[in-house]
Image (cartoon, rainbow, N blue to C red):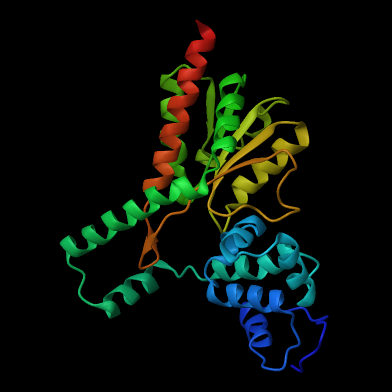
Length: 279
């Protein structure tokens, strides 16, 4: 690929973009080079960062980041980020591969593995303070405590989180219905305009969860998502609310320490707020 002053190229993979940015003869301003350095040094994090995050960490203005995206031929940051999110989703190996990778790294003793997951849990829990916006959390609690009906949704790895969240809300007399998909039963028709769909989903997103969310938006229900990556523009509604939770992993195995902690906090706060309203 030849160097150009103003790139009009589109890149199909992160490696293609990286190769372009590493060319010695690219004509870039100081700010663009600063942004390039940050992008190259944080490849594993671009999928989960926002423009505001990058600006805060790099010392750049958001406008400089957008100019960088345009320089690379993208329409904006969301299009550039899609490359990194595609890589993020594709990089999760199957379980056999994960076991093989862990064996290659050395013997797996129960004590050592337990210690690793305890430390990963600590890291995940500490990270909640950085990823969960307090204003969004407060808004979610207010909306949920005022909802006539909460529909909880989550499949695969998210299922335990949703099940526990539903259990806690039900015990606190908060009207809640879990969409479990058991027996292939589609419960989407139970969602009504004005209801809230509280979805827990992690990249790559469950198609079942995405389908229920899309239906909820169409009929005028509000969507609140607990997720690890903010969905791309075009796949998220303008009124959707996002609570971001990220789990550290050990050999590509991730626990649910932070997710369950966030779900527990949310349920208790909603239950307490609902109890005050009912007095």
